[in-house]
Structure formats: C-alpha cells, structure tokens
Image: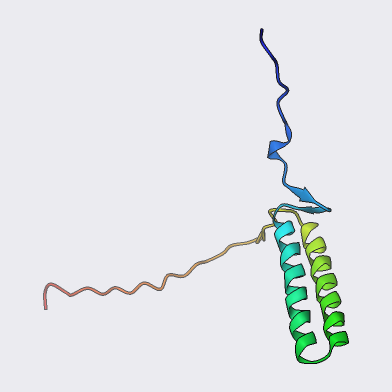
Length: 99
C-alpha cells in the first residue's frame, strides 16, 4: 500500500517571530540583551530608577530601529548609479636586468 505525504512548501520562506523576519530576529534579541545589560550596569553603578529607564529606552529604541530597518527588506543593498573607479595601489618592485 502506497502512502502519499503532502510536501511542505514553506521551506523557502524566512523564519518569522513576532513580526520580525530572518536576520532581524537576531537584531531584536541583541537589542534586548544590550538593553538589559546596559541598564543593569547603569542601575548598579548609579541609581535603580535611572537603570530601569535606560533599559526601557534602549530596548524600545533598538526594536523600533530594527522594525524600520526590516521595511527595507532582508537583502537590502546599496545601488550606486554611475561609474565607480577603483584605483590600484600596486607598485612595480622589480630589478632592471640591464643597468
């Protein structure tokens, strides 16, 4: 008896978690960790309320930045219009065979 299985067609889609796609999930986690560590250090060194405020500000600003960068797409590239000239910095270091 032959059993047929449906093929999962979503393998080519990027990973999505709470609205963040692909590499931006890592960016979001990075900003969360940065906010917690930075706010914790500031709270330990100065004032608990200042540390809490800094934590919330860093996390909110980082996630907002990540959200707006995501709108450009997963593979956003800079497209220069015009001609790009790349100069070489090679020197001719050879000995002249005839002095």
